[in-house]
Amino acid sequence: MKAVKAPDYNPVKPSYTPPPKACDAHCHIFGPEATFPFSAKSTYKPADAPKEMLRKLHAHLGLDRAVLVQASCHGTDNRAMLDAIADSNDAYRGVAMVEKDVSDRELTALHEGGVRGIRFNFVKHLGGAPDFDTFHSTIDRIKDMGWHVVLHLDSADILTYQSLLDGMPVPFIIDHMGRAKVADGIEQAPFQSLLKLMRTNEKAWVKICGAERISAAGAPFRDAIPFAAALIESAPDRVLWGTDFPHPNISGDMPNDGELVNLFAEMCTDEAVRHRILVDNPERLYWKD
Image 1 (tube, rainbow, N blue to C red):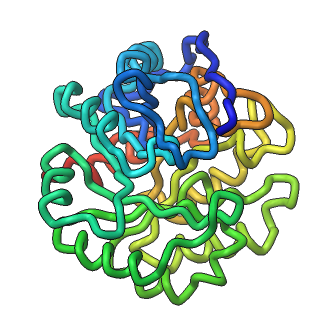
Image 2 (image 1 turned 120 degrees about the vertical axis):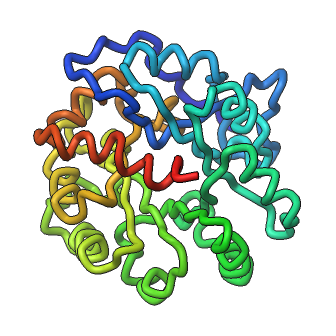
């Protein structure tokens, strides 16, 4: 298990002030390890990033709500996430990872604990696609719960999984702008397939986070702005934004979360659309009940 970089503990104060109820729709809780141990199957070991750290960061950034996404370092042990949600005064929701034999009682408990979605990884270097029998059976079980599915999926693989995406019975979210590489240009086939998906499939959502994962220029990752802007234009009612704090598995420049808030304001210059992405869209997907 390799150690990974810690986040930037000194975020700048953003010059852009998010609106009330603005949501960081993709962030993580890590540990503390002494209370919530990391999975023995994890390929990396992050520094602790407990709920108190996230709450302090969001207060500094001007973000009132958050969606906590279960990361692989905790595997299917969702306790750290659920603990943070329970302590959030309804400001947090969650996206879980579950075992293939998860029981109906366990799914109900996750729902009551604030979980509204489930995450599957398709990225090759992180293990590749899940078992599809498990994938489909789990999707069938969460359908009636009003949940959605988050897909960690490279845009280069969208065509490979086109029939799966076309037949998805629940809303699905593509993480991190489909991890399309800025260096390959905005006209690259993988990114264009993501744009087409967003324009043609009303169940498809996308997160315009992870600029540091696709940038060729490094911090502050402004070369990712045209990609995010194109995705916003394709389907503004189905776009979410998040910090990805505490930025696990970053090999290049570590983002400064205050600068990421300012970067969002450059990605989206229309204040009404900003409100839609930061407030209305996450409200509709996560706080509808």
